Image (tube, rainbow over all chains, first blue to last red; front, side):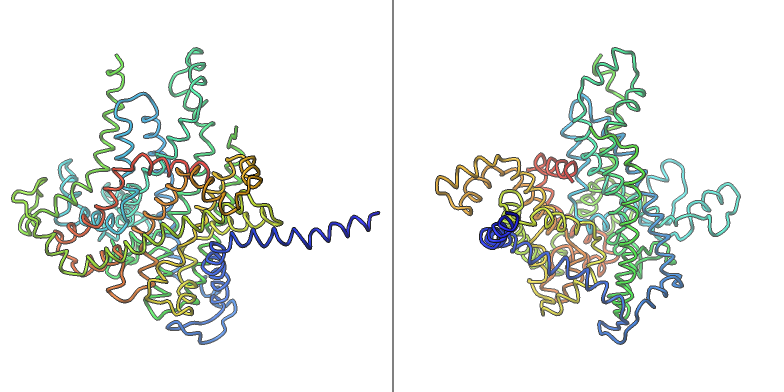
Length: 330
Length: 272
């Protein structure tokens, strides 16, 4: 009996199941082949290459794990990691706060909602190359618009993208204090990049938050209003918990995207990019520089890229763990 | 009463909107200024004697028409290619039944976590090995399949009842016919969304073509613009004119289709 059933199952598998599988794969093939060659294969290749010494794009010897060990002693790598961390920490909370605040302002019966939405979203569709060029001009130390505006409110002009000093030590210096090296914070140049990055990405987060806010049923607020809750209470007791899956998504996305900042550094700082004094050299720029600019050391560049991957992956998992406990799904 | 309560809200929103627009205004304003006026400090808001000289010179200084043509070719191939490959794959994942379907789908989705930086070096090696370096192939083929677009379209196809599928097959419609004659027309908004993403993605892509091209005549628009910026380091009027005409096409499309663009992004966020 049992044997009979197995053989029936096996024969159907042989016949129609194989046919179904072949049909399914045939439909997937056009996308699938591209994904295998240009998405899957490169990841395998990235690991493979990271075990070899490469110069000018040619393999010159087997390295095993020694390039990973080298990373730990590479002060340029640690500097790039620190700058990237500053960049992420500068971007994520501010972007989250500003976009949630603006989305809340937009989520009521106001005139011109569509107009505001269109304008706030405009930078998102603009190419980063053009954004970098325009902001570099705005930050120009002598002729820039920003120094003019800063002067209008009575502040002294700044060097912006050409200022290697840390902002904490600049602020402390203004008050006559001096900070130790490790506490001087990101350079003003890096802060300038953070501001540009915030400006570029804000609209996307606003739109995502706004869509989330519009999904919260109006009755919840009606009921709370009848119970005498004020706006502040309504935000923390209704909006914040119900919007938490969206917040979670935005925190993860903004973190991942800002960890990979490249174009702004490549086009706005320099020359060579990453200046002044290496204070804006971030990980992806370091990968690019190692692999494509100076000597084509692609093995080492791959090591750095895979470490970046490891960091992004573990941050995503950690954030997921922490936030999952507080996220309320319907 | 209504209006009074909303005044502070509008003040804040307008302040925000002004800071969003100001860089664009500054770009356009600078692009119409003479070199003498650009070197004025404090700067003038509106050009005193507007000139189109910067546009004329920037357009002819480097082969911008060629860059535009390259980008249009790449974008057209990408939009068509992504729509076709996504429809086929999403159809298989949503409607066809075959063993291992869900596993394969999840495996494919998991590829999306890998940061683009990981791909730079190995893609360069693979593209070189294929002999595609410095060709249109390198700029187009790797982008003809988009995992996220397959995902969006599969969600859409799944929302269409299976009864349609069964009924169509019984009536003698082929599987291919059902996809193109019934599923695709019913999914127009999602297909427009993935088309828009492909269009914006190809227009704005930078790192990939930067690495994959050496020849001037093969450069797409953003790479051409970046080289132009590096060469014209101090010619602010020329740079702003070039930046303006390179972003103009996307901004025009955006203003015409802004509702669709914004909704596409909003939808993708919630589902993603």
